[in-house]
Length: 339
Image 1 (cartoon, rainbow, N blue to C red):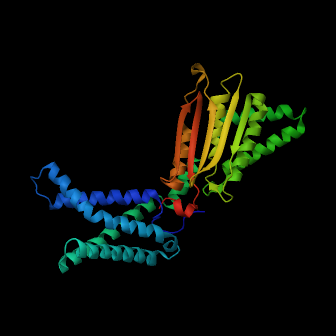
Image 2 (cartoon, helix red, strand yellow; image 1 turned 120 degrees about the vertical axis):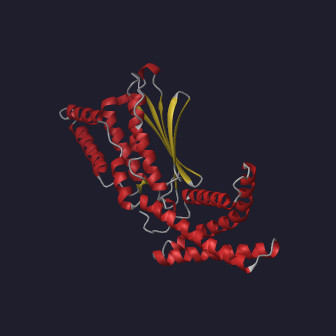
Image 3 (cartoon, rainbow, N blue to C red; image 1 turned 135 degrees about the vertical axis):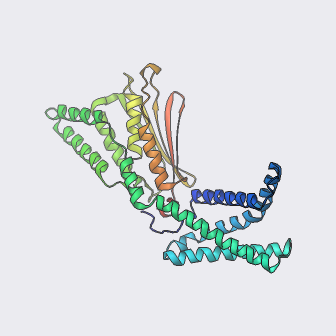
């Protein structure tokens, strides 16, 4: 499930935004280079607006074409794919320049050559920048960071769960055996190579095992309300996304309250994305533990490494509940992974 093509992922929103920002910076530098030293700020802005109106339409045309062509180009070898990107970009720029020449202002041969040379240099510069960006997120670096960012179960959970299982060995040996099996499976996932995506059903099953363990010690104080809508059959998500959020919900929302509470887990499609929402009751202010937000930071970082800007994580309070929402694209990882 990892992205194997070295060419930039032109279906990723982050790539588009970075290319647009890079071009705006290049155009600003060009305006400064060609401008008069004593020009006013308004003159600089007007010049930048004028040159942007000439370059941005062809750029958007090229980016749109590369978005459509990416599924095919991603299957090519690296060098032919780069050649295809350059030829497509220069060809579309030439086409746009021909339209400008026919319908707006005639261009001299020297201006034609200048536009095409600038276009080729522009494409090569962008590809070089995106290649440097991809190297920064190369598999070795990204995998090492993903390993380091895996959410860690709090030590108190291990000791409390073991004590709860030990207390059941004589009175309820079958239940104790099931609890130990659930713990073994949970820690097997934690110690596994968690760099690839996993089926959503597998993550949900892991969460059920975790909740079964927590029920040993919290009993009726812990209630869970699962709301699972019609889910994509082949939906894949990063591992250990839901379980740390459930642990946070129990640690901060259920344990501090003598009467316990209900943890709501909602998973449903939302447009072309998958919405995962977990909420827990807010304890009284005197019992609230601020926490260090490590789990949320880890999940946000892993989402960024997997999806760049295509995934979102947000948390807020509403109706005396603390709510965490994650939005994940339902498209294949090869189409959303960081370029």
